[in-house]
Length: 42
Image 1 (cartoon, rainbow, N blue to C red):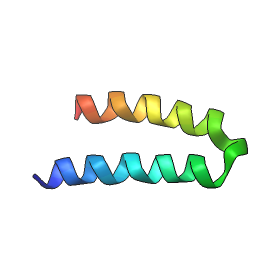
Image 2 (image 1 turned 180 degrees about the horizontal axis):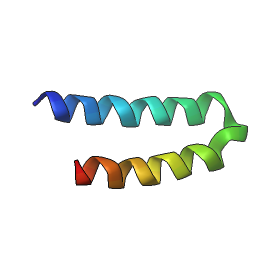
Image 3 (image 1 turned 90 degrees about the horizontal axis):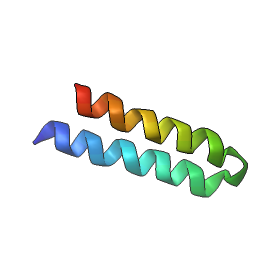
Image 4 (image 1 turned 180 degrees about the vertical axis):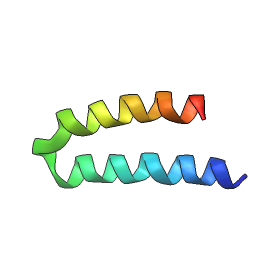
């Protein structure tokens, strides 16, 4: 389940960045959206 843990850590990292830097929210949302597609395809 290493990939599952990586997936959780990646989303937590993106979520924490969005909370720490509110002005980056549109960029973080874009990255999170396409990270989901990337992780689903891999």
